[in-house]
Image 1 (tube, rainbow, N blue to C red):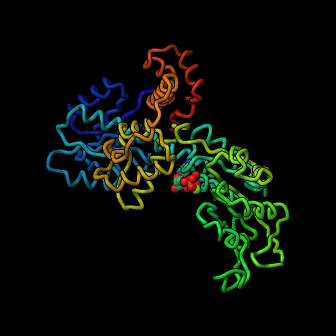
Image 2 (image 1 turned 60 degrees about the vertical axis):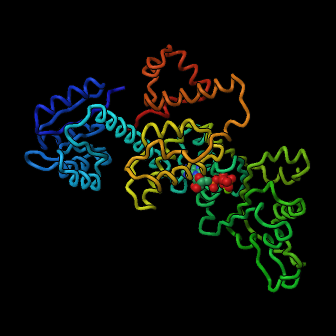
Image 3 (image 1 turned 180 degrees about the vertical axis):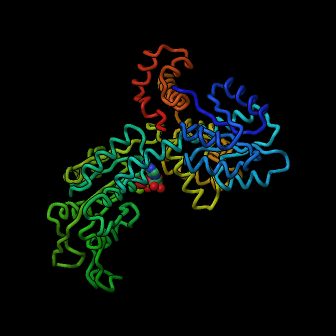
Length: 456
Ligand SMILES: Nc1ncnc2c1ncn2[C@@H]1O[C@H](COP(=O)(O)OP(=O)(O)OP(=O)(O)O)[C@@H](O)[C@H]1O
Ligand SMILES: [Mg+2]
């Protein structure tokens, strides 16, 4: 892997030289320029990973130069160097897109920390953009972040079957994105101009579920003061999403089976069958095979709906997705809350990677929403991550030593891959293992180094 390239621009030649030596010693590849023309040329010759720019240059000011550099290379993080007393301009620079600033004379350690943050942030942002571009070609899936092999497979399957009318059966723990996928299937289908109607079978009281779903005739029961259309009819020509289908009462299951077989149904209190044209998508967080075995779910209905099964893996089994989904939420909450939060520190990311996420993506979303709401700085640090939550739920039952070791190994390898951007030789050096051994371990844990590679 080539070392990160850092453009340094300062008209103070001594400082320029000192910075170049320090950066070189820390393993970076510095490109030093003492004027703006040199800096622009350097950027045109090959995009650096980061630029460090002095606020006051001889011919121009650092902010103007930053904007010229970013016009050549959008999203390039820029750290501004300022003299004491020019904090206002530094803050102005941040508003105009600088990643951060450092006040001279600065602590060399602080400089290296800032650099590491900026480079890691750029890596994650570039990766996120690459994924969004890739997925964006299929617009319906552009809000679904999927980097892991498992999720890529899910999206491939889902996009392949979206255009058919087959029933889709989505299974996954709570918060894994079942509804998101169901909506994406609808939006990728030819029914997308027609309604998408979501029915939460667990939320409707048992006595009302039939009339809610199939509608009723006026006077068919107390309170039925007028005819009602029901959710199935509302979804006519569109998609009906039967969420938490495992919680549907047995009697309703029988009626649903009939609708699925005959594509017609009787509203409560009516003798007249109604025909309906629907795509059916169902979801459950239960193991429905188990429910069938214990006679809580009809076997015939299970086979009717289990046509195209889609399993959404829990977040703890696809940890490579965490940095990107987290960054996606940082950007979206930051813009929703009109804040200017750029990213997470490596420590904060580390904490996210080490958590087990029993509540999956929804829990991650809530965690980031909280952190963005509380953040005072442009960058979210570890103290705002999961600080108010208890970890005890992860540890209810002690695991076996083998399980604990496997968990540690998988997390360690993920971090190693994140740190080296998927460079197995470097990872082998760092971990003190032979390359072949490391490949073996990565394979065992289903971790693909390719997915961690830098794309810019
Ligand atoms: N891969 C992803 N990329 C981006 N956002 C996601 C992803 N997966 C889930 N989300 C978001 O996480 C939240 C939870 O997802 P969703 O409601 O679809 O999950 P669910 O499986 O239906 O959960 P529940 O079982 O609790 O109903 C939503 O805000 C959704 O947009
Ligand atoms: Mg849901």
